[in-house]
Amino acid sequence: MMRARALMAAGALAAGAMVVGPAVGPAGASHRSGHESIRATIYEGFVNGQQSGTGPIDADGVVDAHGVAVELPPQPSDSQDVNRSALIFRNGTLDVLSTNNPSGQPRVDANCNFTFRLTGTTDVVGGTGVFAHATGHFDDVLHIAGVVPRNPDGSCNESDTAPPLFDVVHVDARGRLSL
Image 1 (cartoon, rainbow, N blue to C red):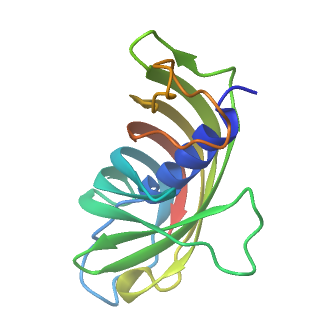
Image 2 (image 1 turned 30 degrees about the vertical axis):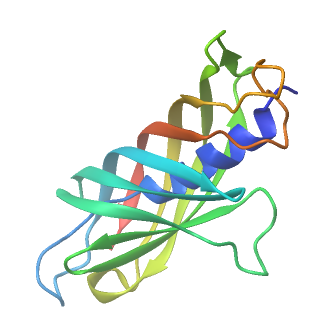
């Protein structure tokens, strides 16, 4: 399963990192609920095998805003297929959990560049500030491109256990958000 496991983890973290980018009206604003569309670009690095990433988010719908996503380490209660992120905005932070599924195998070219597509879901599970009671559910499509390391013989390392050197994840999520 050529690199799929490592890339699914990358995509799941990115999806979680992107899913809702609101900076709504002042604290105490009335309850709002409806359709939301999210677009994000997450830049991920892998240092000593540990993944970290951040990137800008644009949200349209219940919330129209720009924010920053930060990938978080898993909590002891998280299952292996769930990834956690914080979406940080001027008026508070949204907490999200993401799960992704592969849609085929990654494609790796002779220069060790790869592309991969994932689909999945993201759930908004709370937050701080004006997002303290936020809930939501999104269907995600992720397009990932990056570079895998080379083996000592110069070939591309396509092992499931070797993380990419870096990747860029473009996320499009659509769903519902309640504040």
